[in-house]
Length: 219
Image (cartoon, rainbow, N blue to C red; front, side, top):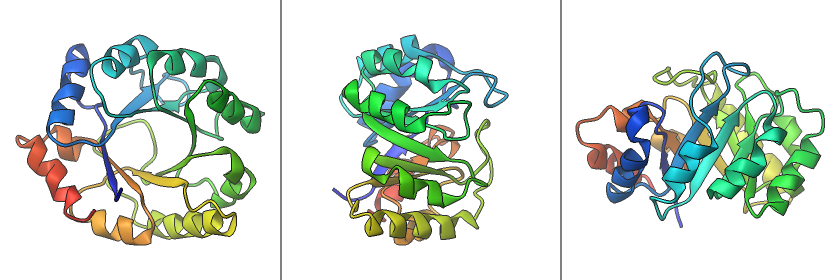
């Protein structure tokens, strides 16, 4: 399939998110990335499952709900019912039983993902490799859009890819979120990225299709 381009709609007008997602699909996006924040795990409060439902019912491409929340177990069912294809959780949250939560995501018919903050050691992937379909590597600290990419995370991408290969899980996607643009896309793909999440680089552009295509040239 090649590299997947997944625009984040965090920077779009929150009263027009379904329309913005539909526009990004027309512009060539492969997925839509939802940054779900609870104001506790990160300082910002964004949107919930109702917004996700309106987006999922508007687009035909997969929607990935990235739950930057303190208690993801209480939310996964509502995001699954909303139609999200992927549900990605953080091991740094207050959930003590990550295996159970990942298993529940799959029971609900969704693909489970695990997100790692920049300072989170990659070795955790080794112990959940059989339960996940996606690893989301944060290359900025979560909570705000428009941050600069932390280039030292590129080594982490290679490490996670090696861990997955050693576990015979070459099929698990590696998604990169944070400061992704045309200047670093090829570096990230060469390191092992499968999915490029890009927010302000795409949504702040006057030519969103052109911004998406500038990342697709590296697919």
